[in-house]
Amino acid sequence: MGQKVNPHGIRLGIVKTWDAKWYADKDFAENLHEDIKIRDYLKQSLQAAGVSRIETERSKNRLKLTIHTAKPGMVIGRGGSGIEQIKEGLKKYTTKRVDINIAEIKQPDMDATLVA
Image (cartoon, rainbow, N blue to C red):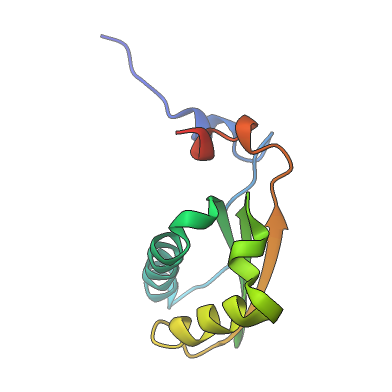
């Protein structure tokens, strides 16, 4: 029986990039668990919006989230109210200042996460 390798792991650094772009020495585990909780919260709360990928970038006291979605209007909401609700919901997971960017997926039928 052959050894199976995850295709995402092979493509990292060549075709695909990491979903988390930050570095930490001592508090790596805390940041990792915080990222996981944030991703779970966002995927659960934005389930109808067709979220494909969530990228995180960290600095000392700032967290930048990029949400790749097929329906950006559902995430943004009327007059930006959706983003404000997301920021309020994220306050229980992190104490850092949260910046949210929305990236539209132009061809949602070509994204494996959305098709599945």
